[in-house]
Amino acid sequence: MTESIKMNHAALDETLEGEIILRGRIDPDSLPLLKVADYQREVLPLSTIGSIVAGFNNGSIPDIDLGMRGEKYMERGESFYLHDPVFIIDGLQRVTAARQIIQENGERLPRLGATVHFGTNERWERNRFKILNADRTKLSSNVLLRNMRHDFEVINLFYRLCQDKAFVMNNRVSWQQRMRRSELISAVTFLKVTGALHAHIGPGKSSHIDELGAGVQKIMVRTGRNILRENVKTFFQIVDQCWGIRCITYSAGAPYMRSSFLMVLATVFSNHTNFWKENRLFIEASLIRKIKLFPVSSDPYVANLCSATGKAKEILYNLIVDHINSGKRTRKLQPRTKAVEIPS
Image (cartoon, rainbow, N blue to C red):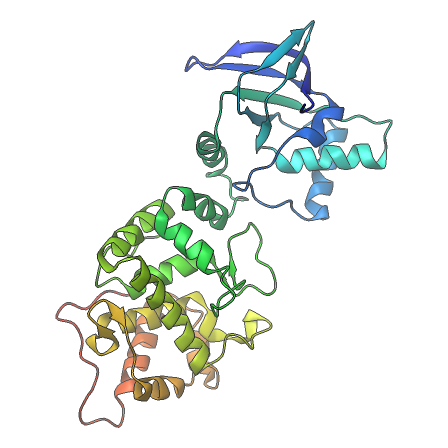
């Protein structure tokens, strides 16, 4: 039988919305029993945890938010014993810091308050997690986007694709709070590039992740799941073939992996019919050879444009188009009747 989580000095309360909750102080021995779902951000570095530990010393640590997936509990005096699984919704770093205090000094027990919601499920907890964290600058949009994979099939598709060892961007896209050294772009950039690449097919332009997810979801409905997946694979394979992704050890030395350059290149592809067979991205070998000669790393002016925004994106866009068309009398790039604007 699963051990019960003990709440000391606890009492039931009712919110303004009519929800019955439990407020109290979590028993230190129960901290290891709290569960962590994958909608959480990762545990932050020791330096950050250390600042939370200092907060325990002066009593400035706010209560954590918990969800019990069930309603079984026992009341005994001022203590409540929670029998169903209890998940951390908000407060993983505070729980980690409290456990560190106990580990380093078993005689010093941290005082950590908690609010417990009854009868929760993962979907409810994810929404609660988003509400509590969306306005905090410390929570990365990549974490929110990762959690949206449960609501948008297209985001789940790309999340799984980034774990595919055959994909050139395997383990190169950050879906976490902090970007690892081996990761080259964020999940938000990955989705924005996908939207820009297919902006002639559907609503792929937005800076708000909810709108972006919904827009790319509509694009997938129009292209089909497999074609969209292959288009994204093809795009990054071309970047790898032209300038190299697999060989990168640190992204700072690869201007072609900057968000601005990837967005502009994707828009160049989207705006011209030469790169498409209906809804499928298809680039001839001769075009790939010409794109490969674009001096994205060798020309300092171009390299600087790769990190710039605003008007610089238009300059970079025109440089790429002019480069591809240079030396050609025929078979120049054919723009669509209505060109797609370069996303910000």
